[in-house]
Image 1 (cartoon, rainbow over the protein chains, first blue to last red):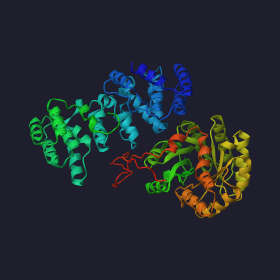
Image 2 (image 1 turned 45 degrees about the vertical axis):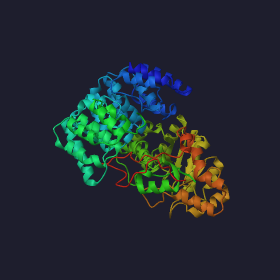
Image 3 (image 1 turned 90 degrees about the vertical axis):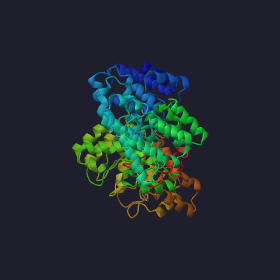
Image 4 (image 1 turned 90 degrees about the horizontal axis):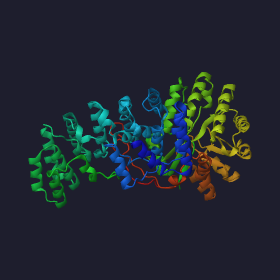
Length: 297
Length: 298
C-alpha cells in the first residue's frame, strides 16, 4: 500500500526527463537489473530529480502517515522520492540477492544516496536483516544521514535492541533534534533512558549550558527523584515555552501533585492553559510538536 | 564579490581555512581526486577517499555555506602502480556518476610513462562514454611537452575541446592551450607554480576568455585564498571588472556546469548555513557559538 502511494506521489512530481528515466528504470528493474546496474540507476537519478522539498498537500500527507504507523515522508526531497521508488521497484526485495546489493550500495553511496537508502528501511520486507546497517547510520557524523534513519521512521523502535535505541534517542537529544518525530518514543520510555537523560541534564547544568527542548520528552514514569528536583529547580529561570514542556514532562512522569503545584504558582496565562491540558491527559509526544521549530509541525 | 575555486583539496585543509574562505567570498569549490602525499597501498584506500569526496567533505563544506563539487579520477603518480591502478579503475564508475561530480580528474601525466598513458586513456574514454568534463593535471617537469601530449591524446579519444580543462598552466603553455580550444586554468601557488602578480599580467595580455584561476591548495605550503587574493591584485592592477569576474567565477562555472551537476539557481542564492549540523561528541565547532542562517558576506 505504501509502495503504490509513493509511486503516485512520485509520478505526480516528475519532470519529462524524470518520467522517461523512471519508466525505463522500472522496466530494467522488472527484468532483474541488480548489482552495478542497480547502483548506476540510483546514481543517475540525480540527473532527473532535484533536492527540492516534495511539498505534500495536507491530504497526501494524511494518506501517507495513515499508511504506516509512525512513518512520514514529510522531510523527504524529490530526489529521495525517486530513489526510494527505484529501490521498491525491485521484484526481489525479500531475497538474499537484494539484501547483498543493498548492503554493498552503502560502500559507494554519496551523502544523498545514503539518506535515500536509509529512508527506504521501514518500507522493506524482513527489516530484521538490516538492523546492523541502521545502527551503523546512528554512528554517522552527518546530521542529514542521522535524521534519515532516526526521524519519522518506525524502523528503530521496531527493530533496535535497548542499547541502540537509547543511543539513538540520546544522540537526537544531543543534536537538539525534534524528538517528537522519533516514532514510538512514548512506547519505549525505559528507566535507563530516563537516567541517561537526567545525567545529560546534570552535565549541561555543570557546564553552564542550556537544556535542549528534547530533554522534556525523555523522562518517563520511573522512580527517580531527580525528575522532580530538576524541574522544580529549573522552573523559576525557564522561558514560558520550556515551562510548557516541563508541564508535559511532569504529566508524562506521573508527577501529578507536582504539576498541580506548578500550575497553582504559574502566572503566565498561556502556560497555565497548556499545563491544564497536560493535567487533562494531553501529554503524548505529539503535544511537543509546537515547541520545536523544525518546519514540520 | 563571490569566487569559485575550481581546484582545491579541502580534505587536507582545516576548518579555519573554510571559515577564512567563506569570509573572503568563496562560494563554490571543486575538489579533484589526487594522491595523499604518499602512495596508497590498496584499493580500499581509493574507495574511502572517493567516498569522502562525495560524502563527508561535501557535508563539511556545506556547514560554511560553500558548495562543494568534486572530480573523480586516478592521478598520474599512482597510475604507475599498475596492479593497484587497474583495481582503482574498476571501482571508478561507482563514484564518477554521483551527484555533484563535475568532471573526471585530476588526471594526466607525471613522468609520462606508458603506465600513466594507459590509465589516462582509459579515463578519457570513460569521460567520453558518459559525456563528462575532464580536468587535466599538467606535469611539473617537462611541462610544455606534457601539456601538448595531454591535449593530443584527449583529442584522439574524442574529448570535445570545450569539455577539457588543462590545469597548472604558465606563461609558456597558455598559448597552446588556448589555441586548442580547451580551458586554461592557472594555479596560484607560492614558490613553485604561478604568483598572483604574474597572473595579473597573463589576464592583461590574453584577456579573460577560457582562463580560470585556482589555488590547488593541498597538504603542502599553499594558499586557500589564492583566488580572492588574485582578484584583489587584478583590481588594483586596473583589470576590467568583467574580466576579474570571468576568471575567478564565471569561466569555472561555465566549464564545470557542462556536467549538468551544478544547480545554477541554488548557487546564485545566498547560502543558508546551519552549523548545528554537527555533533557535540565529534564536532566541527568546538565551543564557539554556531552561526545559523547568516549568509556569507560577499
